[in-house]
Image 1 (spheres, rainbow, N blue to C red):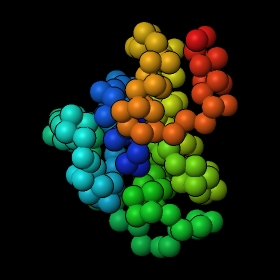
Image 2 (spheres, one colour):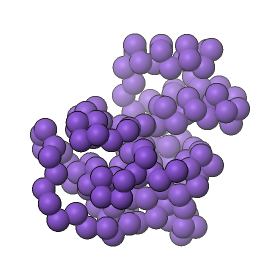
Image 3 (cartoon, one colour):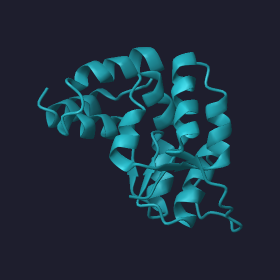
Image 4 (tube, rainbow, N blue to C red):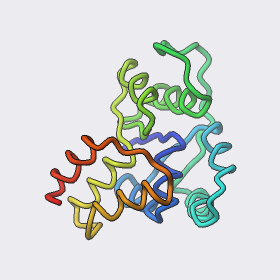
Length: 162
């Protein structure tokens, strides 16, 4: 499956030590250079080490594909988000990993299928790769500073039968 990622799903999963779930599910994840630059500034030492190891191993791959035309986005986004959406469109990605609500809305606006850290953790739990989803959500919140809407958390936990 052809997958492109923005910074947030990668950094958040790396911070809680679950970055490898993406390799297990997708095999290869592509990122634009702007996302690679943002990941290079990750201040969490263990998370940064996991990201660097994934890039070195080649399953997290910086894709230099350039997009010349302006994107038909409904509003302005950050550099990493814009670049990830552009790369996903240019390479016809089947999934764009992106967590931020505005970025997800913009990606959907241009016809992309989106997923994020929460959905990837739910998938891993349902596939038997995680013993408990609730623990991972708590780690996301406390270790990575990830905001989880209470209603979304209830829904995800119900899907995991927790």
